[in-house]
Image (tube, rainbow, N blue to C red):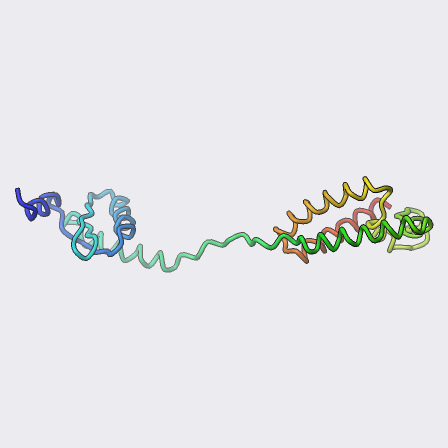
Amino acid sequence: MGASECLDEPTYGLVPLAHFEQLADAQEHALVVLAMNLDCLITVDEAGFLIHGEEAFSAAILEEFRLYGEEQQMRAEPSLVPFFGSGVEYALVWIGLLLYCFARQLQDPLLEARFVNSAQAVIRDGEFYRPFTALFLHADLEHLMGNAVFGLVFGVFVAHSFGPFRGWALILLSAYLGNSLNA
């Protein structure tokens, strides 16, 4: 049996319907034919790949190919979840600010009394800055380090979801509101 005889036999009475340069495109369109519950065959020629189908259904198959092509053109690109930077630079600024405030707090013992979150001062005296300034005060170095490490990890996760600036602004706003409600 010669090479030319081998090329003619495997089509099993199916006729060529469409030509594709890429195998992936031919396979994709073969799935369209199979979804119609019809037989098909992909063969290779010099220029690419041929899809063969049943001659009686060739018009319907070609119409499905056309409709499939239109559907693919209208298909929207999948929306990706935005992935922002880590916001590590904001976290480092935050930690630097905490260290500075802690050093000032150690130098001036009255600083804590003036800026700690106090329910009486917030509600009775209207000192609404205290829930915010309390975010910068810490009882000791362990308290400061624990908050800094947790804040760094939490802040990076929030920054990845909302963006660095917006993420850190939301963290500060949430902490302020939490302290305000606590007062």
